[in-house]
Image (cartoon, rainbow, N blue to C red; front, side):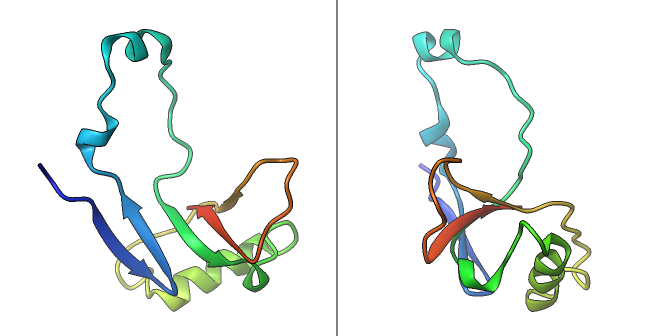
Length: 98
C-alpha cells in the first residue's frame, strides 16, 4: 500500500492523500458527480495574520512564490483562496487552496 506523501512549503505542510483512500464503492460512485478541480494543492496550517486575501491576493501569491523559490523551480501560482465555510470566520490557522 503506498504511503501518503508530505512536503513543506514555507511554514505549512502539503498533504497528498493515499490513492487507496480515494477509492469509492459502487453506491458512492453512482451518487458522485464529476467536477473539474479548481485547486491542485491544499496547504494546511497557514497563519491567517500573514495574508489578507480579500484585499491583497497578488501580494499573498508573491509572498508564497518568494518564500518557496517557486519561480526558480518553474512553478506559477494563478489563484489562492481560504478553504473555509462561508458562514465562519478565519481562525488563527487555516487551509488554503493553491
